[in-house]
Image 1: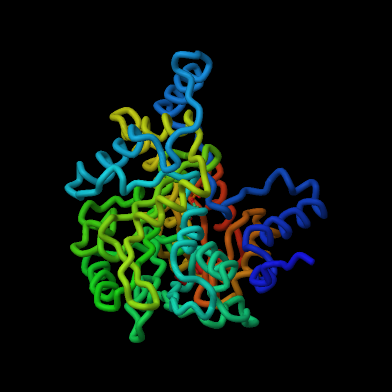
Image 2: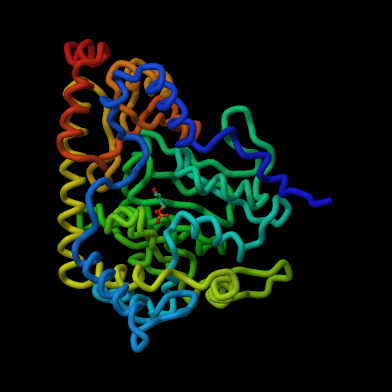
Length: 424
Ligand code: PLP
């Protein structure tokens, strides 16, 4: 008899986006005449084509594979030296942060890494790691911990026993405070998905101090760092002194280089970072993560690695800036459009997400249904990101400009909007 990983049976009914898809498909099949009008501002997927620097590089790499003299088979499991160096130079060393090439681990995107990092940390509900999760949160952190058995039973509201939830609210600017109790692993994400919030240096410093004091590890998700507009804000946790001893950083090229379909990202695991055995012996995690990669993967495909390196040359960087500027232009239009109808708005200044309070304390799934059926616009209900997301919704700025302008026009025609605008 084969036994199943019963942790999977604890997962809440559905990952947020399948549930959104189910409601959208059911509306579209009941109203085929309205289906073509539907505009999706829900899932955070990019809409614009790849930067030409990446395209040219991919073509060149494919041509290399076509010739015996330049053909490539298996490469290093954690990425070719040329791409690790390009990343370490351009994302860190050129900004004064000392990261070695060997501290960069290339992957097929950061979604997987945010979960698989748990393979080298003690897991199972009895293993002892107390795990802190911000609320609302990118659901992948929670679900990965459920799969690894790091939580207890699900509660009725989508949360799990055994996790420490850190509320993010308008009062704290959607930036979690350091907890009063000790925790061992902390997931932080800035710029934040879903709230679009950004942390400043002083508050990030408080987190690093906390982690060093408690010998905890911060799992720092930087998927949207390219969207930070204010140079005084930290683009990497390693800008904070001491972070190399307490933080692992996850990066993605999905939202910077438009690689959601190409699939590439990287994790920074500094050599100075340690965790402990139950007997109290210090173990360097860098060696374990290398071991894990070389056992469990043969790495990212060669043409994609060449394209990822090209994102870091002068053309690639300029094209990323253009792409990001375009999406941030969308975010500004969405922010203003929501404000114009009297809605309270956060985010969208250093992130491609605009976070909006529902009108008159409406439940966020009710607002989702209203936007879908009355405006034919798909947003993401805040409750899908956690208990503290109730009463909010997220609009993604990843869309064409005409679609964004149309979304704002339709929001302006909703009944709450006309009432809100009159009262604002
Ligand atoms: N982290 C956050 C916060 C995200 O929002 C996303 C994607 O939406 C990812 C990670 C995953 O990125 P990737 O496409 O590199 O797997």
